[in-house]
Image (cartoon, rainbow, N blue to C red; front, side, top):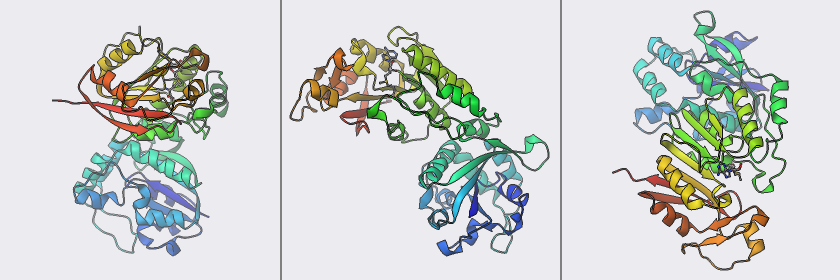
Length: 409
Ligand SMILES: C[S@@+](CC[C@H](N)C(=O)[O-])C[C@H]1O[C@@H](n2cnc3c(N)ncnc32)[C@H](O)[C@@H]1O
């Protein structure tokens, strides 16, 4: 089987491949024009920024793209010749400085071509590398391709890039130029066994995903909800996650480059687990054990998340008012509607009440205080500030997700 070596230009792919046995026989992405060109053995060198060149030249947005819409990568993956990959990550600042000094492309199609420093510097400055790597890992996972991550930096010793083993959970540190040793297997296992590790399925180092032991309605994990929020670059954004549980959303935001992260969690066991995971990952997230209603919040956050929390809160109006106060840009609420299974079991409701501002009184007996219609929540939030909103079907049955955006005048 061939090994796919992925990374943006200037990350050090060629240096890595040339240090491997038979590395000189590597095939470049640019030499592949159909699936049949994909070699069955050896190394394949693929520049993750390859097709962004065309988009950059056309002046398009290169932050969001489907990696497999690029034909060469699509052919490589579809060929079935690759079962292993090496993903190389270098600090963004080093990618830029290497691009500014570089004069030639590698020999690929048999000729050396000149390197357009200005174009590549522009591309490197505008790419959302945090999202690029996350999406690369997702793509590899989806196609059953096992991968290792290598941190590449000229700061590690010699002038040319040297490599150290990294981990997908630490790539955001690497992009900022920090190398963090991957936690030991036993340390990951110890955190993963904490009793508060439940509800969310966390991406932990060394390929471990935490287990959701108790909550069937979120057994698939929370990635689908996250992907609804991730409709823009999250790099540099600030986020407040109210009722953050074990911190899954904070950690996802952080991997996507968010800079200021605050979580508030009432439950001691979940909070302890969240803090332990954050420590394991050298996270910047601050996670506080507090009731949000009484927690001191001294700043505004770009994104404020209230995901599957509001229906547990008796004083939901005060809770919402405080959350709106903390919202700089988006307030994101995931909540049970009248169609929620637990609510329906208590009181079967037929008909569509979504356009009526109704709050359904549920019961502590089913661990639920209220359910809401879209019209109810949009009116409640609309009375507290100037917002537009979009409504989304939540991946959790009977729930919805509303994304309120402040109208900035
Ligand atoms: C159903 S879980 C949802 C977790 C996470 N937001 C998600 O959607 O994946 C609700 C969490 O909110 C927390 N919570 C409930 N009321 C809270 C409050 N007043 N302040 C802080 N956390 C609260 C609970 O302890 C629980 O961990």
